[in-house]
Image (cartoon, rainbow, N blue to C red):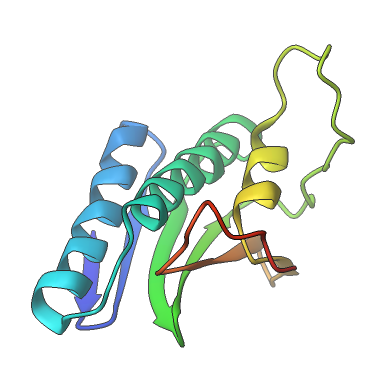
Length: 143
């Protein structure tokens, strides 16, 4: 199920969908911001949002089996990506380790976003990140 207003979209997943389905929702939302609302969405921002959505959905499927909800919205000059899942356990953010095989998803998310928040809810948790719509890889990240 997907619900969209002009500046936000939310989709509920039962956990059986392809991760590419979530990326498609993100890309369609950003294309709509650009095409219908005239907002500038840099190519880098588009790629970063798709990458972050992939990583968050992958983690939800791996560590919180079952349903999850992906939401995207515009806040100022950023797109907020939010993912609710049923697990109350906060994600473990490991220190960077180039010799570790796997478990680099949250490192990627943290390095790619302006903001990273974990909010515990009555059931499960919500992870919310922000990505500048005009993200420019040549500019240093502001945290």
